[in-house]
Image (tube, rainbow, N blue to C red; front, side, top):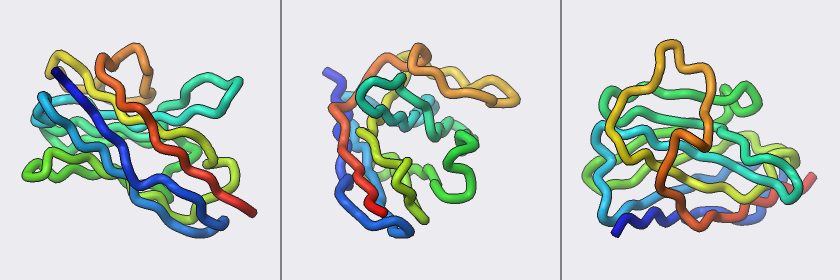
Length: 130
């Protein structure tokens, strides 16, 4: 049974940093698409960062480019999302997701769609105060 578990969320002031972790069980991250999404109540889920673990290819939404970094630790079977210079508009529930079929992303990788992912974690809350 595949389980993705997020951790690392919390409350910070604007300008602060957090590192989210997504640890998998029953699922190996090698050669898979892994994504970080966020959602605010009443709004659609937004893909913010993705990684193709087979080649360290990454994607970032324009809203987080230059502030967020996605990375992998295969030994720990964990994907990280380092979030720096956080802003109040980054406040959301953050989810990690993995695909079932190990295929590389399109080139160029222009979007991150929730429909591309099959496994989801329960989410971790990030709150940024001004």
